[in-house]
Image (cartoon, rainbow, N blue to C red):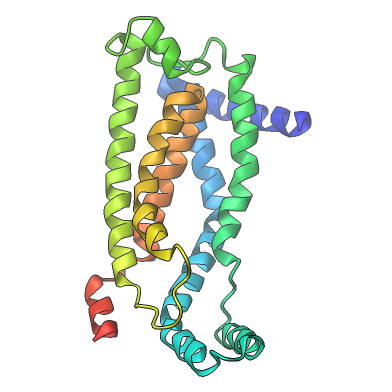
Length: 243
């Protein structure tokens, strides 16, 4: 852990040195944003594979429903038939979680790094990278120098979350209805999933500012990436499927 943290810190510091002529005192903050973009770029091939898998699962949903109806009395035969269909269509049930699993260690390492003393003396305008929102509130309040930086960040997060919310709603609407046995709690999950876009607001409020920059950049990348990867999906396609 310490070796990886040291490696991550060195990478951010080297990026900050390269960006110093352009960003001056905000070079470290810019380096965090660039580092996050590089991490997400490295994971992008897996995100593309996950998107293809999700589209494939949407495409085969009617066939899955037919299998559930056909083998309703034989769970073992149904399980084998579903596995055969997934193999035939080259659909992996785990493809969608691989990008998140690979990003989690990077986030944890960056969080520990940004929670330490290495961010001391670095800031984005009036907001120290090692401080939290509570620190900004106790030094000038919500409209103080640091508080205003957080307000801009919150506004950015809210805009990204609103865009992600609308896209998630359209994407869920574009998925065909599952005519087989519904998954318990699926309806509640469908309603809650788009709202998860706004969870970033809570994260930004409680983590160190440097980690908040990492989270916001990664979240914005995710929203734009998913909008790009699923840009061909329209609700009209869902209506045609359900007709």
